[in-house]
Picture 1: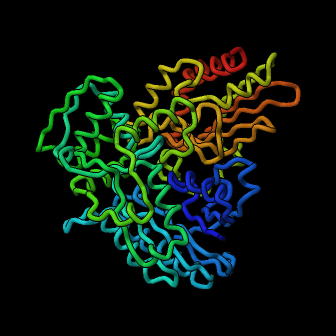
Picture 2: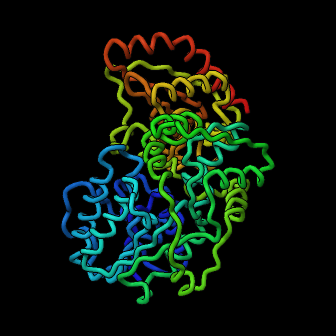
Picture 3: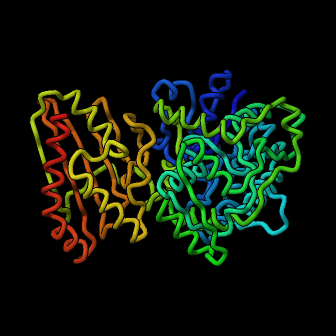
Length: 474
């Protein structure tokens, strides 16, 4: 089958893509920027890629007519606290317009379980998207899920952050809300199982794991699995806004995502039908088993995708290509060079920078900068990195975004998503003479920007000088 995969860069899309290719399907990936598709060169040879922003003016004729099915995996919850529902409605409407001239017979959408009358804005928006997609020309199959558990999923990483960092938690009352978590493996089984299955046309299905748990029980079960001592104290008077700030400061989530998550956590998300489980003969994975499988991937450095690599996890959501050409006019620089005795080792060190390995020198200062960034509403250092030694363009790397990762030409370019009065780049390049060039570029915004740079100059000299020496020496 010829399949259109939207949201190919997302958490689910990145995991679904190789499964579809393995099953012999011809896959067309729709992405906002072709430079953002974080897949291997071998995978790129097996797929087609089209550049579509479903929030912008339609480009007629961009999709082939002979599409058989399409996956709609586009969500905007992390991008806004006010108008994400309007964006999701517009994207779904435009998706229908793009698909109408094709021969597509089926659209598959992952929504949220919406069995309560008083829904959150997030769940209401997902339901509204369902209704919009149902007005399209193709038959619609909806899979409604609650919390998805897997390495790199937002829900799993938030629970992981909370339990690993806080032996004693003072929590809001939403920790008593019940939900039905589902393993990412089961979600993928359902997504591939309904493809082309006419029994599933024009129908919606709740999908969930075998366990109905409160958020408190989920955290306690995680702690037991990890052999952590955890105490949870619930205070009923913590407001949603305070709860959101609590999640934001303790975990790696953005404030916008935290606010929308807290709003949804007051609603019970429990499945009310198991029809699809019977149709596809699926035996759902337990919550504990899902945690175990997630940690196997983490320990083996095989995390395929992470919500943190989404562009909406950072400050900038513009086209990355505009930041590839580092400016020099009106900029200030810190330039370091060093001759390498072992250039290949140094290149591996560059490609392993950040995350658990850190920044090679004065990591405590980087951590302080991360805390300061978090206090002022930035992303902080907690996003880390998805893989310990692989980097793709568009990936999140602590409080940087990967703009260019050209290992063949030995060049890595990062763009700062921390809170700064201006724009900042950090570049590593090894030339043909085996000299490592490390350049920090800052384009200040007004007087405050220049004051910031010159105030930080002594620290930059100390940090950047030590960093390049460690990269060359390790």
